[in-house]
Amino acid sequence: MKLKKISKKQSLVILFIALIILACYIYVIKSTNILLSGQALVYNAHAETIGSMRLRIPKIDVNARVESMGLTSLGAMDAPKGPSNVGLYNLGPRPGEVGNSVMDGHFGWKNKIPAVFDNLNKLVKGDKIYVDNGKGSTRVFVVRQLRVYKVDQDASEVFISSDGKTHLNLITCSGLWDSRVKNRPNRLVVFADME
Image (tube, rainbow, N blue to C red; front, side, top):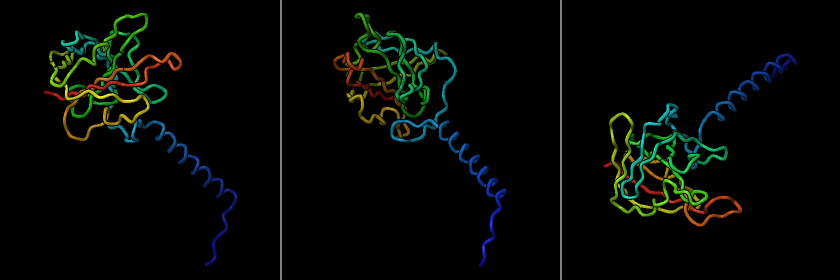
């Protein structure tokens, strides 16, 4: 069997089509949000304002406004800009939806200003956490456990759940401040389940 020679014009057309396919592939890859363990997220971003949502933890005197948080340029969950609010991870479920809803807040703010999660480590199994959705409904969560992660440790289980249940996980920094890297070495996570 003899193969037909491809003309220069046909070669350029094939090359052009291949470049278009490659450009489309790169666009799709860059548009897909990938988190931690490489699993693609399937939740829609919650672009609307959530300023009327509040997190309440009576045991540690928390009554905080909730901000929408995405990812930093390094792929980590962003944190609220100030010490008083908490951030809701906007690429995951909202509190009350199936899966792991994740909120973060600061511990140990500069100049000894109190931060929202300064006493998060005082929660114990059975303590209650309340999320007011700002529309007259409150979700109640019960603390299941507290766990400390190293800052570079795999924390996929904080964000991804496959048990079909509704969870709320709270994250804050812990450990001594490292002025060289301007960060704390650990993350305290409170795992809670909807009542």
